[in-house]
Length: 265
Image (tube, rainbow, N blue to C red; front, side, top):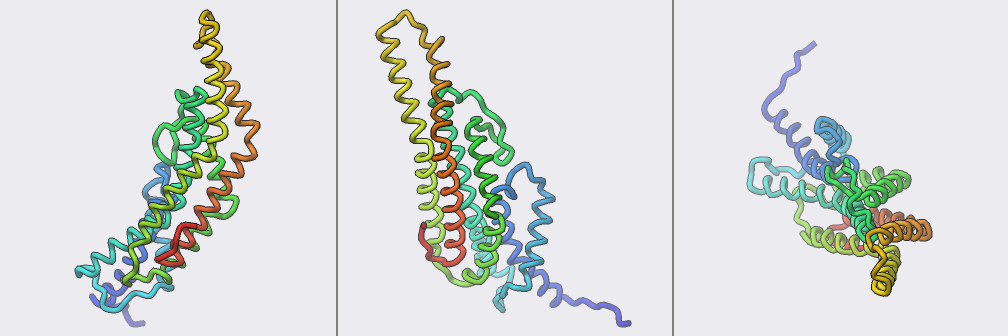
């Protein structure tokens, strides 16, 4: 049995083959929903990045002559990291829009003081924002969004090859999609917000007509009850809006990974 011998050229080849997919996959894991949450330990993220790199590594074409320590190699490394972040961020922003929608409703109905610590964001979030986030996460898992997102990441290695010159307009696409996502989040909360604003206007008229009534004594209770009634009445539309938002985010991520000039769906 001959001993296993290693030389510098073999080690450099192996390191180079693992280095490039690790960069894109690492950026993706850090930005993707669920996997990029702060509650996920760093060791778990590292193991997941390495496991995906080992699985996708043999399927990736590494350009010949692209050195890790050259100027072109450093630029390619930065671009690889940004591509992974962009693909994961497209869906991550959709969840931020759900938090925004829940926060808008909470502030209007008087639940702005009721907050919970969101494990994914590591920051206090209003209870309705947390509720919308949970519904969005369950919807994301129910439609196999995590598998679709991994498929988009794998496809990106063919449509956006390592070291190739591609249109940096991909990042403009992410920005435009983010603007549209928050517009969609506002539309989810718009019906409830308008109804609660009308309730607050009615309370203002009543208080003006009868100053002896205590606005803080009865107004908060009426606004809170009205908010829950509005949420129950519009629950179907809210769930439909959340599902449409998640589906649109997954479609945008697939389009983003499928073509460097893909537009916002």
